[in-house]
Image 1 (cartoon, helix red, strand yellow):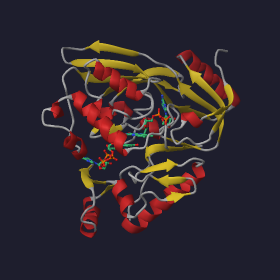
Image 2 (cartoon, helix red, strand yellow; image 1 turned 120 degrees about the horizontal axis):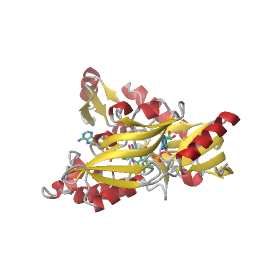
Image 3 (cartoon, helix red, strand yellow; image 1 turned 135 degrees about the vertical axis):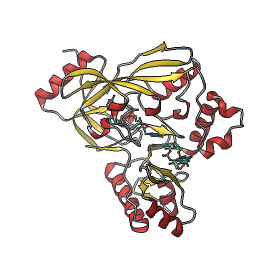
Length: 337
Ligand code: FAD
Ligand code: NAP
C-alpha cells in the first residue's frame, strides 16, 4: 500500500471560492499504479470519490464524504512535427497558466488567449476552457485517460472528447475518466486570435500579429476586471452564456436594444453578465456572498460564505433573469456533493 491518505483534510486552499470544506479522506496520485490502488480501495470501501484539480470550477459543501483525490502527475514534452507544427504532451497535474507561459517562452504559440485561467491541465478539457475566442479544443490533439469503469489507460482523440461550448463528454460522464495527460498541437508560427473588442482595443495593428503582445493584453484585462481568488474567493463566471433561437433573439433585441449578443450555434449567444447587470445585481450581497462590483457574472465569497448561501444567491439571480427575460441560466461550476 503506497497511497497516503490524510483524514479530515481541509480543502479551503483547494477551492478558489475559499469555502471551509473538509474532505473525509484526501490523497494525491503520482502514477497509474496509485490510481489502480485507489480504485481497489474505492470499490472495497464503497466510498464516494471526487477528482479535484485546483478547485476553481467547484462549489463544495462543508463536509465532503468519502475520498477526494488530486492528480499529481506532471511532465512536459515537446516534439517537432515539421518546421511549424509542434506536439506538446503535458501531465494532467501541471498548472494551466504555467503551461501557457512555458510554451510561449519557448516560441510555441496557440495558448496565449487562455492565459491566467486558474486550475490544472487535466481539468482544462473537462469544460473545454475558453476565453477571448479560443477554446482548448482548438489546440488539443488528444487526451490520455484512465477509464475508471474499465480499469484501462488509453488515448481519446479530439473528436472522441465530444467538445461543445464549456462542455465535453468528461463533464457529462462525470467521474468515469481521469485525464492524466493532454496532447496539444501548437505552432512555431503565430496564429493569433484577436476578435474580441476589448483585446483589439489594447493592441496596435502590428501587435495583433504577436502572441506575446496578445498574452500581455489578455493578462492585463483579466487582472483589471476579475477578482484574484487569492484575495477574494470566486469561481470565475458563475453562469454559462445562454443561446436562444433567432426568433427569441429578435424579440429581445426589440425590447432591449442594447442587448449584448453574438451569432452562435444557429442562434444567438447572450452575454449572461449583461442580463444580470441590467437587473441591478452588481455589488448585491446575500449573507456572506455577493455579486462582484465590476463583473456581474462573478459571484464572490466575502468571507464566511458557504455552498448554501451561494446556491440561494444563484437561484435568486436565475429566477430574476427568467422572470424578466424568459431565459434560463445554467451554472457553470460543479456543485459537490
Ligand atoms: P476543478 O475545479 O478542481 O475541477 C473541475 C471539474 O473537473 C470537476 O468536475 C473535477 O472532478 C474535474 N476534474 C479535475 N481534474 C480532473 C482530471 N484530471 N480528470 C478528469 N476530471 C477532472 N474557465 C474558462 O473556461 N475560461 C476562463 O476564462 C476561466 N476563467 C476563470 C477565472 C477565475 C478567476 C476562476 C476562479 C475560474 C475561471 N474559469 C475559467 C473556470 C476554471 O478555471 C476552469 O474550469 C479550470 O479548467 C478548472 O480547473 P481546476 O483544476 O481548478 O478544476
Ligand atoms: P467580455 O469581453 O466582457 O464579453 C462579454 C461576453 O460576450 C463574453 O461572455 C463573451 O462570450 C461574449 N463575447 C464578447 N466578444 C465576443 C466576440 N467577438 N465573439 C463572441 N462572443 C463574444 O467578457 P469577460 O467576462 O470580460 O470575459 C472575457 C473572456 O474570458 C470571455 O471569453 C470569457 O468567457 C472568459 N472568462 C471566462 C471565465 C469563466 O469562468 N468561464 C471567467 C472569466 C473570463 P464567451 O464567454 O463565450 O467568450
